[in-house]
Picture 1 (cartoon, rainbow, N blue to C red):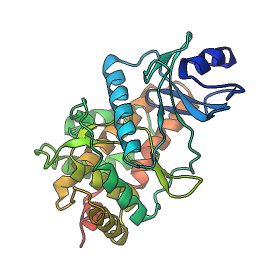
Picture 2 (picture 1 turned 135 degrees about the vertical axis):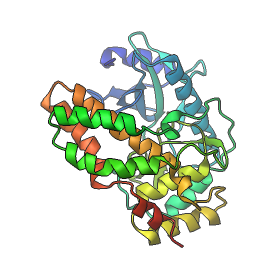
Picture 3 (picture 1 turned 90 degrees about the horizontal axis):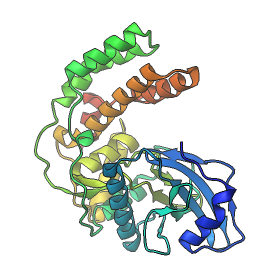
Picture 4 (picture 1 turned 90 degrees about the vertical axis):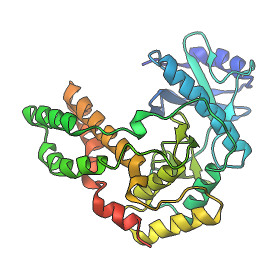
Length: 318
């Protein structure tokens, strides 16, 4: 993992035009798909310093830059999200000698929760889906393609051979997962640049009130109808009244998407399947008890709250 420390502080301040006195956190305060995050406090305010890992591919970096541009458009549209701090040279990523980093406003948020106010949530997603932005990142198979029965069979066999403690629980869910994957493959009803990662980790209550959306690194073309369905899965689940409240607030605030059929749930079906398989593979590859426990917890998030046909039907009610 690429890291930064106090020896990088002067270069960091110079790269982004920030003033002393300044203090960098002793270590990362969080981590993301494309690197770890430090906190930087300066005379000009507090910042999230995201270290761009050394193994970030060219495609990942292009996605990162596209996400930053979409985030800037969202800020300009009044969406509650941290601002991107560009370097003195106008770049999203700056080389500070020992590492490459990017900065966002620091926003104090509460832990992930799925009981966010449904009206506030519907309003936020509606506004996000109306941000004027034409991005450069196309549709991603992670959000559209099935895992498929063959791969599920292979993964379950490996889990059983390795005596994964959750293998049989997952096996009991796989037939329905595969059946739901049969809803994938249709043409999207609409396409626009979407956040594509509106799970509870990235939509949270802020300490100052209201809710905030962040981490635009996965942004790209997607069907807003399907992203709205993902929000319903995460924040309403089996509660038809919450689903209706989110959908009504979304529509009343001009949101372009509508969830009208099971096929509109293609994005959460695909994403959750890929997330679970990735967690299983990481569990199989883990070499320590801590790593296995971490990845088992990731898989159990789905086992304990699975996306099923009954959940889809509940979310479509009314």
